Length: 534
View 1 (cartoon, rainbow, N blue to C red):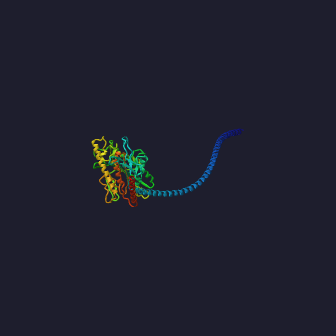
View 2: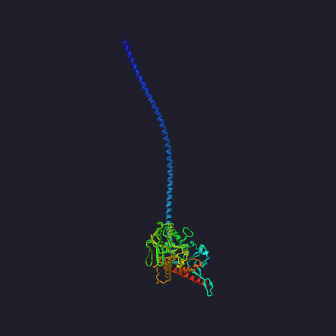
View 3: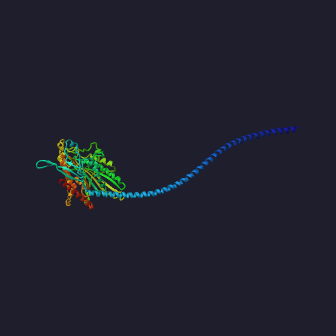
């Protein structure tokens, strides 16, 4: 019995022990169940996230496929456009080739036209004569109007004739008018204004610019008594487009032609500015570029007032050098040159340099030029196609007054030294003008045994390749209308007649044309003289 109790107690203890073990297992299982439940919940949450992401990816994938389909469609469209552009490019290539061929044709046409233009210009100049003479009549000045001056010049007959009244006294003492005809290549009257203004003058003159650009030497100079408008003709008024003279208009024309012909020719312009000043037998070449530079860098300006004593010139000594025998070339050694690429620079600097020229108040003019002013434009022309280089020269000369030396110093305000200096200047001026007149006499004589004399005077030496030979020369004879200057006007027109009769050295048919033209002019003048006398 006791044994049974012990066994029952052992069984109870074993049951309790087993029950305790089962409780622990239960707790462990419950903990594991909780963990599994949490894992399941987490997995379900992740599943939902994955499903959402998958749905998003499906949507994006669908959109991507749709975009791909769109791009494929656009690609096909672009392929079609590319093919269209290829066809257009080929069409453009064909059209471009046509335009290129047309451009080449036009370039050849422009070249031929430019060459023909230059040839015709020279032929026209040869026909008109290598030396032409224009006469320009100044209007009455304010002073002449105040003194009720009487006129002695009559214009309006035609474009090439004017009349000068030189009254004659008969045996009884009665005075009667005696109008004498003078003929020129062109006459610019003082009325009406449109026939004698600066624009009208240049219209008849501008051809000389292109002829110089064609490789010829051309020269334009103004001659006449002080106060008759030489400087007005050559320079005019600075900054006034209506009243500017030949020089600024020529400068503008050079650059205009350069621009017009830039497809065919390259042009280069270099300028020298020289003043010839003299007293009695002394002469001096003065470089106005040098004097202008001295003015620019010095506080004390170089005076342009003509001196009472022969002036000292501190610049380099200038020398006139002539080369060649048949075709002479003249250059001024040591003279400064300035190269210009714009009209504005050329005009401004040349105008500034002109202010260094010697002037003086005289009885004939408040500011009379006491020297010869020579502006030389050297022109280098390069044919872009053939690379041929030719050189021409345009020389513009404003001569000092041609009146008698005694008349220059009429002003009572002048002291003895000034009067003596002005008379000495007048002697030097008239000596150089006399040399120029003698040159015209020889060139117009037709006597080949007489050799023209250029040496002995700076003016004729510098103009050696610009007057005579094949050079194209234009002379303006400027005269006043008042009778108190009658003698000076007559002298100026006689001087012009020497130049008018010159026929330069031209070859072939051009020489025949020029000679025929001069002969016709003389014949017309003779007939007009007989008609007016009859």
